[in-house]
Length: 262
Length: 319
Image (cartoon, rainbow over all chains, first blue to last red):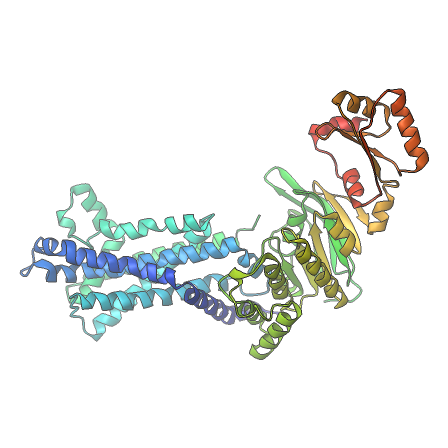
């Protein structure tokens, strides 16, 4: 019996399982989408008026800040959603069902691909909701069809990379609690980027970090694609980071998953 | 390929260590088709490690094993297709319903939609889960969960089923139900390898029993054969004081004292003559017995006789 030939069938079966689990456990999806929405409202309505004036744009204030912060919030939707990936992978590992899968003649990788594709779908649902709310509070992207396609493609690449990283974080965690904490830096990193305020306003050391960490080119590229600002080198750098993180996450996850049980 | 004459499980010289801790030290086993084989042993004897190796979860350091005629090392997928495993910790998806769990197994065994549904319904019927089938497994009782677990294992029509401590943590009634189900498996022609630390369980279910201790097979045979190794059961004597306990264990042949409970175990069959001579001996030493009970031989005696005591009570074995 060939198990490699069943890789696709088994992955679809696992995906169906993961989607069912998401439907049964909607509070997690809601919580994951809720986090970026709360930050969006907080930054637009509480800080937005003042921060917008500091952007140096011809029209300051809240309206200018919504357009500035929306790409960071959109990225935050992804980092929050992949936290859910780590949690559900860790839940699987602690519940013993994965041990059962391992003793069955199925394509081994399907357990992981089911999680990855399920998380991609979950994240894109979250992105649709968050972008919708951002537009409702005044975000006015000026991108054309091409810009939107490119932005969605970039978001897919970012999500794919961070999901694989989170799968590895979920596998390396000994408990579900650890799994929910490990991806925390991913949620904080957008703050230390050009996402909320321009890096020019930061002190030297922080500014250096913010300019070279992976989320800054992602946010800059996303901002450029959605608002028609020049994208420049940010897009290729962002995609390069995605490739590196995706490959690293995948290899790490595969190694952890194939590690023998004790 | 599978030949009907080959044993269901054939294990040769299996070794496994974790770090410098030797868990399996050259294990040999043969399990004939259509039988129940029990691996009996205390915690840490290597039972679960054996199941993990035979179910392809863990690679052995040395040794070979063939399951349903397939070599574990070279044809792991053929082995996986032939086996079903119900582990110590139930492997059900808590967020899915009973039916969904069973159909998930059907899909992963590539049964096809119709056959998967048919078999899932049959399993619900067989394991008394029809009423609970549409509820998420998270709400199941321990016994229901174990039944669902076993039903999931059977969805793939395995030839060899591994049950790792299948009744640990179950109430007596659920345990009895599980025993009934294991009996049914063999009636269907399956081969069952079960691990247990309950002697009664091995006695009730198994055709053959292997006693495992510190990674060694210390005895193997039918329950009756094993019981014959400890001919007369034992007599348990309780004393009022430690001094009497010590005096008694000094004068009685083969006595095993337990200072904590102030009791002494003496191997013996409990015939009138043996008892009288024992009491006479104690009388001569002026040792007062506060309680005397006679234990007819059971697997407990086999177990305690065969499994090595830990070094801390080494003095007991000196006698």
